[in-house]
Image 1 (spheres, one colour):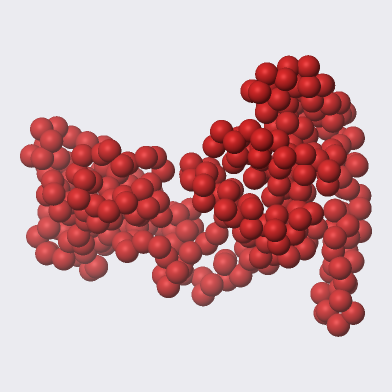
Image 2 (cartoon, one colour; image 1 turned 60 degrees about the horizontal axis):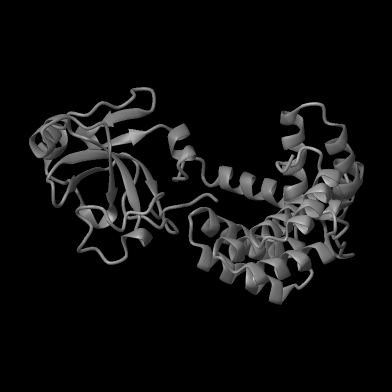
Length: 321
């Protein structure tokens, strides 16, 4: 999802020159994460920061001489919590900076603005504002909407509104989607002659399962998946459970809830959620795999073998093979 200055979860921008409050070295921000990509709860220098795992973190290319003074040697980059940084406003601090940045990605703008200016490509890569009057964001939003419509149409869930001016476009999407229905994709999967092709088809089928005619529910599913990928299983599970309550026929929400329960060690709840997913979408090979793993972990080996065989019937490229 693209961000803009008003909605950005971080305080500093790409190219800003900052100083570490504790170790007193300067550097240039070259990337950021709204939350740390790894567990930082035991890191030195964060003991006085409340809940650092939920604070923004920055990739900082530090000043060479400052690093030698602070650490006894050069450092290529530092990963720093936002709470430990201050912006450099002193002219000497910015103009005496000694950092190595790729000249193709960064423009030295120290004299005029006391910062490095990232290229448009780099801004786009890291989700910062670019100078296009919002056109890129509008195009991406329209593209996302059309792709979502396509997957919803593949599942036969796209509903036309007689007063909707987009009906003609929706009809075109439905026509194309019918050529790539779930049944067709499963045939492609069985006929695939190499792993790369099989993975591409598998990913298309998975996207199909995520599709929902209510865009807000699909967005909530994506948020839950993002939390799961960050390791926040409890928060992800809350989102998936809310989805299953809102729409008990949303099979992918049940499947993801099953994954969370499994990772949290609740095998019975994981089993029940997987079975719910399969009662809605019997061909959901991920849920079948999950069922087999649960049965294996609970030492029901004969049932696990049956589930894995069923998975291979649905997807010959299943990892259980």
